[in-house]
Amino acid sequence: MNDAIMTMMEQYNCKNNEDYENALKEIVQEVALSGLARSDFFSKASFYGGTALRIFHGLPRYSEDLDFSLDKPDSAFEIDKYLPYVEKELAAYNFSMTVRKKEKTKETTVQSAFIKGNTIQNILEIMPRDISIRGVNPDAMIKIKFEIDTNPPESAEYQYMNSINPTPYRVKLYDLPSLFAGKTHAVLCRDYKNRVKGRDFFDYIWYLQKGCKINLLHLQKRMEQSDKWDSSEELTLDRLKGLLTDRFSTVDFNSAKADVEKFLTSHDREALAVWDSEFFIDITKKYLK
Image 1 (spheres, rainbow, N blue to C red):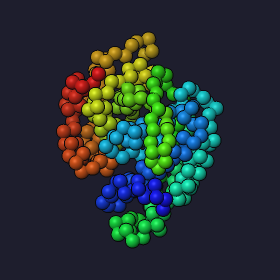
Image 2 (image 1 turned 30 degrees about the horizontal axis):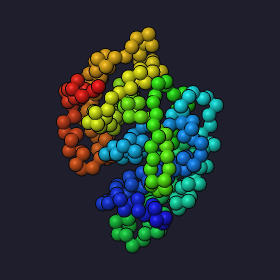
Image 3 (image 1 turned 30 degrees about the vertical axis):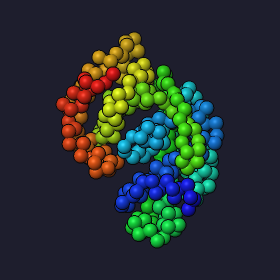
Image 4 (image 1 turned 45 degrees about the vertical axis):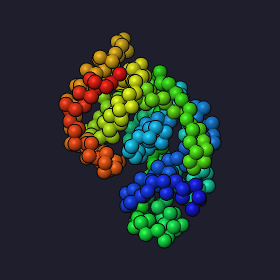
């Protein structure tokens, strides 16, 4: 295995199969980003979402997807132009990868693909004497969803950030207030149906802990695009706190805890004990700014 990938794996101090799978998935995400950075992708699009927080801001949970947004609406944008850069980069680090389209059941402005690879088997072949790795299912498949929004809401702000793993590269991503707006939009507007996405609420707390301000205008534009806000009105912080209070009052936080547990360390799982409507309403009143 490539020395850079081995060094990245060692930094995770994996203890069990789940640790190795999560670490491998994150390494593949970073390799994919470095491949995209070799193209002109980040002159047209920006990185956002949980994985952006995890890799560039130290969010203490694993994230599954690579989410991007065009800087300007472009219905003619084709993601296929950039997938070969990802495949080539992955191959350079001894990952055998294929890319396939995700079939959509309804019309959407989000283009999607899966990055797939038998990466665990690759590690087993290269490090056969590692007992802990031997315990990983050699047939396990790492899947990473790669999505890009071709009709982005207005008023996001951006920043460039750098990484040195697995090789030095630079990406453009939403700044923290705009990322916070995107997460708050998910908390308010995501249709949870039968399963609450607890990762939304974990990330929401993280932003509050960091003292992040929220890009209210970008959040308003996102809500307008989702038909959740009247464009003739202004979304203020007080009105947002009211909306969040209403939302938290209806959430099944037991379901939220069950969703997020597998993405957390045992230490972070302990903090889930305080999750209930009263907790989220209180911290929103105190810390959202």
